Length: 114
Length: 114
Image (cartoon, rainbow over all chains, first blue to last red; front, side, top):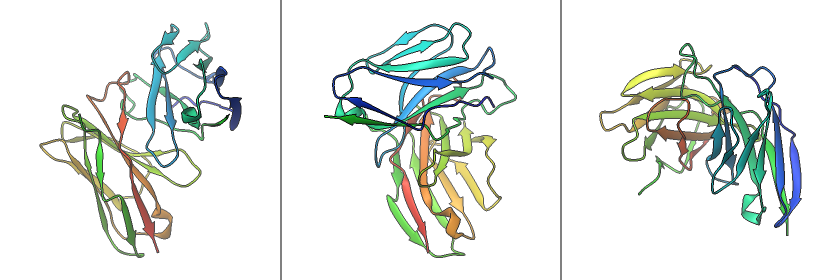
């Protein structure tokens, strides 16, 4: 399965935008890019996903590079509640893989300062 | 609507014992996955079940087993517990095992092996 690389940690001030990068240079053409986050003492929570085009939802935006070798999760106005570990995950559509499986790395610990 | 529920919340066992963890998926979800999260690391995939059949298994020893019931709830069993099995065990449910589907995680069961 394709691997992702994320910074170990990032910091932001409250109400400022946050750009969380993810590199996935070995991504295949049919891999979805998913982002999950895990707040302290909770299970992971879905944030957003995309395949080729940029995506927006109520939580965040996902910007995908044209060559798909990297992506950026954008939190438009960080709040204290956004402090969490953010995971960038590739999900394969290859029927030889376990389709429902999520491969978590160590993620990026986001600290939000008031 | 109720989210994914897991029981028990916390559990303390001693080495060599056996443990059963339970998970109830969101109503209408037919796929359940289990993950192990050791402190300081991202969750690691253990099993996926869809329509009561095992659809994927991670790199875990045969001491780990699971099953899914007709109502789509699931149990994870771990035999001959080792100290290294101490972790947060997470259950996730989704509509099916398609890679574009969001997975919803429960709060987890914290297992401590003494």
